[in-house]
Length: 359
Image 1 (cartoon, rainbow, N blue to C red):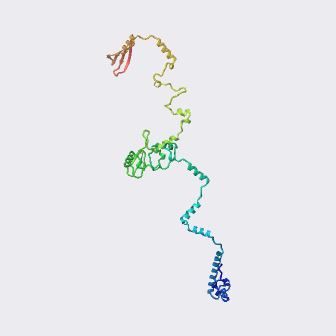
Image 2: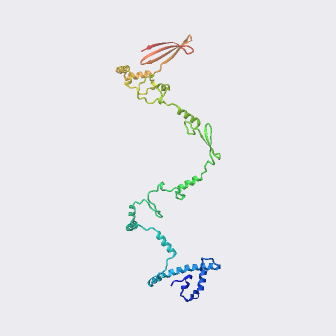
Image 3: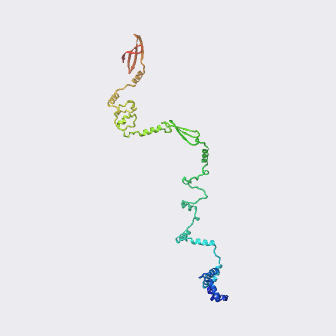
């Protein structure tokens, strides 16, 4: 049954409200709850506010009261569900997170099935794996490397530490570390006319001499000037015949063609055994041929000639007359004897000679 509002007291059937249904009381109640006129009692404002809020509650209760209730079967189900254990806050959050996830497509599901059907490497032998010619692997944590030597390009920068170096290299490094260098502090340079001195803070200076034609050294300003001057010179590529002649060249290479029209070539510049028969003049060849036709001496004659040729002539000093000395000399050549008389002054000058030839 719906609940009655204060304005509906006259229709109340409950005996508890009988005293409030008299005409006077109904008038008093209506006047107290009437907010359309000014109240002479300040407490009426509060009563009117509370009356309105109670009317709102009555409207809500009456509205729910008119609703259709649950059946016995529904109430049983509600009781059964009420007895169930609910999910926790963490589970509810996980469900919400999973609900927001994107599921897999049919194609992805097909790929998963195909991968499940593949044969893994768990049953493969070492030979099978080697045959795959693998070019990439993960981090190898154990084992012994017995492949080719590792090239420099595959050694990381700053990865070769001291313990990776051979003992011989470490010994050399230690030896070099222990050496005392000659340079302490900043270097300086002092140049003079003949050398360049590199100075150091500890006084261990080094003097490098200027370069010469026979020794290495420092390039001086004079050498630089000479190089610049030679660089500025004209080469012979544009020189005329007259220019070249004016150079008075004393050495040339092998001349393969041309006509010699200079001075006659001296004997000293003719090589030994270089004048062959075809180089001789015809007149000389004729004389050689004529001499070749002559009858030569016998071996006996040649022996006598050699013996006579080896003889030494005699020189005899005769008496001195009028301050002059007469000397007689005998010489022999090829069987012919020559007697020579020579007049010599006191100071050794020859004044007169006379020869007598005998054969």
